[in-house]
Amino acid sequence: MSDREADGGAGRDVPERPGVGVLVERLRVRRNAAVGAVVGLLLGAALYVVRVFELLGPPAGRQTFPLVGPEGWFLLLALVLASGTAAIVGALLTLVAAYRAVRRG
Image (cartoon, rainbow, N blue to C red; front, side, top):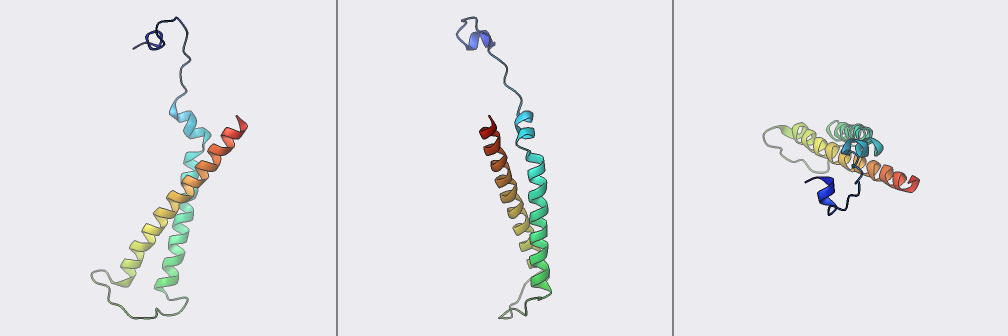
């Protein structure tokens, strides 16, 4: 369907929409995702080190950890925490960029 058919054939010229790439660039999605990934990895690594090396003291109760031991389970938890934090930080930074873009017009 052409632009002319889409507007009812009235002969008006419909401007082309900019591509999604322009929006992604303006919202700085790549940068926000990279910042989120770094923050998430740092947080996950920090908490993993604190827990595994018992920097804040030993855990209150001793538990059994099947298959991979406590280090393996806490590494998996650190990865989940890191990826969740990365997603949240990236989304928040993108929302801030969108808000600023709308305010500027």
